[in-house]
Amino acid sequence: MCRLQLGHNLADRLRITRHWEKINVGKQEPGDVGVCYSMANDLAGADHIYLVVRTEGEDKIIIVNNQVQGKTHPRFASGQGGKAPTEYFLRASVNGDAPQNVRLAHARQTSIALL
View: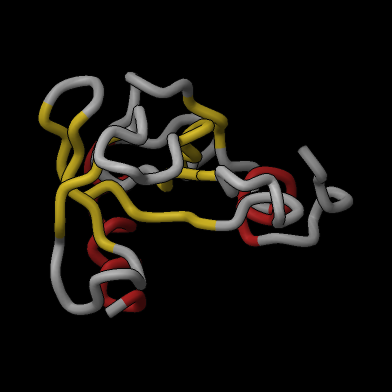
């Protein structure tokens, strides 16, 4: 899979410049950002990100993104339903620790910005 140099896409900028933690699939929480790569391998680097609004187990999540603007909708981290599987999640951190209330506040602010 082709990758851009570090720092050239939003996922890389959040992880490297903003020091967001990389979280394994299945450990996602509200406020995390899911990172997907093109299933066709035709795009370099992360080609889609989304915001986790709510989790419903390890795979099913309720998200907001630019594909269904103005509404939350379900997605499976595994890619079930024909979507690209999520490679990993990013979590905002504050001094190395992101308390739940900080992540939820960030999720609300980011949701508004995405809508």
